[in-house]
Length: 167
Image 1: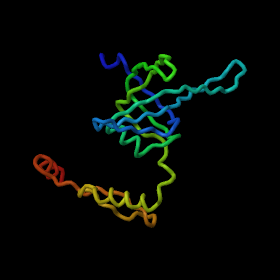
Image 2: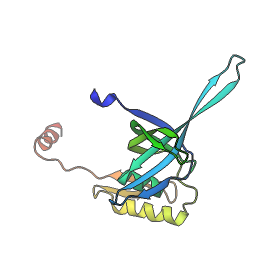
Image 3: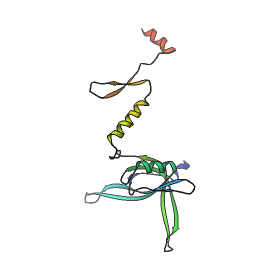
């Protein structure tokens, strides 16, 4: 239960292009804003949208994923913890910032429309090459559609004896 003390889960859209920074230590950090929307009906029965903005920080591997696969407007789910930090700006005013440090990131929504069909074909060929030898693709009644077919399992040990008794 101690992990529930400072935990936040959000699903929303990335509000700006993620900003990547590589620190002197070699660590990678990405920062971006995230919008979450809530819908409700007011007293007149009209649908009203309320948007909340959050600042998200992700480190190292999660930063790599966000850098490679996301851009402004993408839907994303983030799980992490809240932190508050302060700094003094250029006019000597102390500012406070509350951020979400992401522990888990889940990419939601449709794939990027900029992906070409050739890239999709190459990826599907890679998946087919990695299929288990116990599964093979066969033609179905629809022309050009492949569907996995399970190969018969070998009967071993007690299963073989049970099969002989039923025959």
